[in-house]
Length: 101
Image 1 (tube, rainbow, N blue to C red):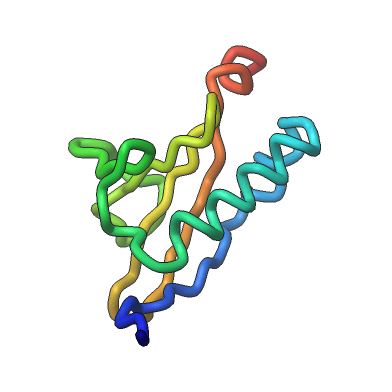
Image 2: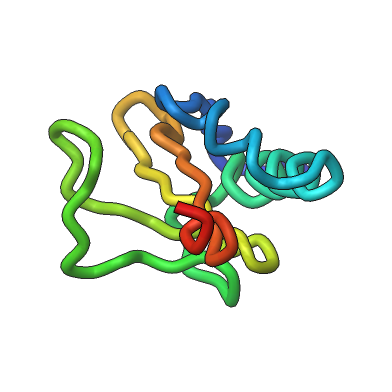
């Protein structure tokens, strides 16, 4: 059986590398693996760990819709460009990282 799901290309916005320096290596690996698994095929489908954020001002130019992917205590914020078939602007945030600032 052939799957009819579209494959989305994942690209990371500026600042993601810096965001991913904060968590320990095992958490960083979990975050990147979860992004790959969860967002490659159906990034626009709401799930237990993925939701559309309403009323949030996007940090990216020309982006009006922001999604959140929950990975344990970490949050990955992203946008989907359906015309290009890409998931872009993934930024990582966590409660612990926010408390450090």
